[in-house]
Length: 64
Image (tube, rainbow, N blue to C red):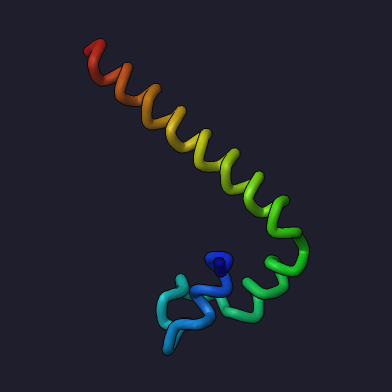
């Protein structure tokens, strides 16, 4: 199974999918700073926070 970075870099013209100012070289540098497990844990924490924020926003909207 490929990591998201490996999948991205396998695409033709992968750099075209990046935000302005971001390069594949910069992403590779970041990718090398973390193990796959560390990256997964970081992603899970961010994902959990995102869904917590969405849930909290939904609760506030329903109260109004």
